[in-house]
Length: 214
Image (cartoon, rainbow, N blue to C red):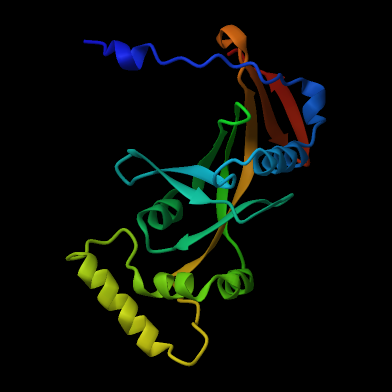
């Protein structure tokens, strides 16, 4: 049975469109502009993105993480290397990112190879984090089974005691990844579900642009 209360949920998109000339063969520049627009629009966590990977049995896996840098080299986020996503990235070396900004009726999808950022970049970012976040990275066995909330709080207390009166050291299992884009798709909602989709595919140092059907 179809639930009509769900099936009848519809949103008419009318905030704008997207032309090939808007991309101008520089999708990174357009992405940065859209990210700034999302911040200006008051989007909650404008740097939040769905990170999609594949398990060792071929199952898709997805979760939301936060973008921490973007430049010509790619899209950077930080996490626990021993987490499920870290192990899946280690096995396949690939990932897809999806940004959805509902206030702007825009979506961006990025796919490509994944590499670790340098140890120094990971150290520099770790040092910039609030102390509570640093201690959380030390204490939490991300994606692993725990006995309960009490175990997590006990591990945090142990980390606080270990680093009392001193800087928190970055754990070896924590650091950054860079998704090096091979394709970037920009999506803008349009009326009648005839959405605008521009696909940018990397070819050497250049980007090839194509329009996709909605």
